[in-house]
Length: 430
Ligand code: PMP
Image (cartoon, rainbow, N blue to C red):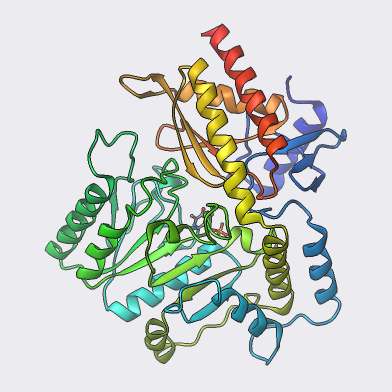
C-alpha cells in the first residue's frame, strides 16, 4: 500500500509550511482526523489500534476530560499571579499521590520545562553543575535539557557538565548485577566530573528507560546508583514523563518499583491526556533556596483549565481502576509475546512493567545481534494492519508497547494476533 495522492499533497504542504525539522512516522505515514478510546480514525473512517500513545493515557478524547476542559474554559482561564482555587485543589490531590517528603508542586506546560526547572533547582540547591544521564536518554527540548538528551542524535553536542552512562540492560548484563553495574557507572561519572573540577548536581533518569530500550528489571535496581549520587552531594531526579500516572501497573510512579523517594520528580505527557499540563514535585528545602534566589512564572503553567483537565484525568484513573488494568493487561501482553517468541526466534526478550512493555528483536539469540531491519518491517507491517507501534533502543530493535491505559484484554489479543501474523510474513521473506 503506497502513499495516496491526498497524503502526498499533505506531506508536501507540511514540508513547505513547517520546514525540515519535523519527522513523520512510517514509510507510509498515517493521517488521522479523529480519536476515541484506544482508536484513531483516518479520513476514510478506518480505525487504527493505538498501542503506542502514552499521552492519551485515559483514552483519546475521554468525555469526562473533554467536559472538564470545556466547562472550565467557559468560566475562567488566567495565570498563577492571581488567587484561584483549582490549582490548589489539584496540587493537594496530586501531592497526596507522592511520598510525604515531596511537599511542593510547580506547574509547567511541557515535560521539557519541568526537567529544565528541576535542572535549575538542582544547580541552585547543590551548587554543582554536573548531570548524569543514560546513553540514549531523552529529557526534552530546552538548550540545557537537549544537551543532556543524547537520543536527539549525532547533531547534538552534549554540554561539558553532562556525563552519559550505559542503560541498566538486564538482557545484555551477562549475569552481572544490573544495579551494582549501574551504580559503578554513576561513581565513575562522578569521579570524572570531580577530576575536571565539576561538582555533581544530579542523576536524572527516566525510571522506565523508554528511549534507551525499556529497562524495568529487576525492580529496585536504581537504589545503589541513587545512593552513589547522594553520597557525592548530588540529587536524584526521577523523570516520570513516560512511566508516571499509573502506567507501570503497580502504583502511580515508576520510581515506586525501585523502593525510592526521589529528591525531585518531573511529569507531563499523560498528566493532561493530550492537553499541555506538566509539572515538577520537589522536596521543600530544595525549592526554598531556589525561591530565595529567583521567582518562577510560567504564563500557561498551572492555569485553571489545565488544572481542571489534570483533575479530570485523576478522576478517570481512579474511577476506571486504570492502574490495576495496566497491570492485568500488561501481564497478558507480556505472556502473549513470550508465547509468540516460542514460534518466532526473532523475539529475543520481553520485558516491562504494566502497560510499558518492550520486546527486543534479535537476528541471533546466541549473539543477541539486534534485528534492526526486521523491527522496522514489523513496525511498518503492523501499520499496514492498522496497528500503531514504534521502536526504541540504540539499534531501534525494541518494540515500544505503551497503549492508552484503557487498553482491554481483547485489544491485547488483537495486537498479539497482528504481531504473530506480521512475524509469520517476515519469516517467509527472510
Ligand atoms: N522526558 C521524557 C522521558 C520524555 O519522553 C519526554 C518527551 N518525549 C520529555 C521528557 C519531554 O516532554 P515534552 O515533550 O512534553 O517537553
